[in-house]
Image (cartoon, rainbow, N blue to C red; front, top):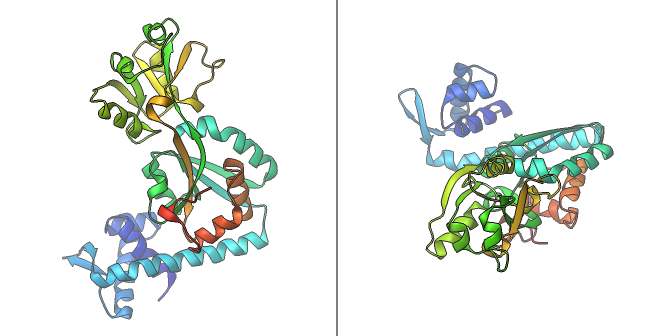
Length: 320
């Protein structure tokens, strides 16, 4: 039994039982992966995978029991390597942040600037995607930290913590009819429903609460464009396509001088941006520092305890 066999089994499951894709991901040959898995099964004394001819189709019942053990063994092996790196070269390493465009564009620049000043020998990478994709990146060890508003607080295998709250704004070009309508009274869902809307894709930035708010009032908003980032939304609002609904962190009155903003938080509530890390991971000192820059109220010792599975972590979400 060796770690290569464990990696082959894990990657085969991750690649939906496709041995060719698993081999490509691990930079080896498909026959080599197949042979190693068979040898591992022979050593265990039972089959891990259900086979249909030469194809693997699913996990056997013993395979489902073995997979979490394999995951833990590989995670602890990685933790050993990281601990060694931590002591050998505390201020050198790599840190990959998986995040959405909104966070990368509007929240993280000041954080990255401060982090780079404190840790000039740490190489930073930003990977972008939907919240679901970000969670998968961390679970697959393709990223160290995920930062997003939706979804990541409820993913098994992650420990998440709230970083900050934000609210929605309605943005329109100067002179838009909605500005006059909302001049003497708060913006309402009925007002918004009379105009075409430009807002986030369903997987991003509080879109769920937007849809729920309209549904509760039995209103059917006309979303003429859904995008994954605020810059695209603002561009099409400027072009006159409709009223934009964006995160308040994405709007700056000076930078976005062609647009006017109306508060919409009372319609859609507060949104919480979360930071998530993999349960069981060993965090290097500079990772703790990055977390502290994003969420300064989070207690580092508590994070370590929760990551190790110690203490109370209701719903996977660390409570400040």
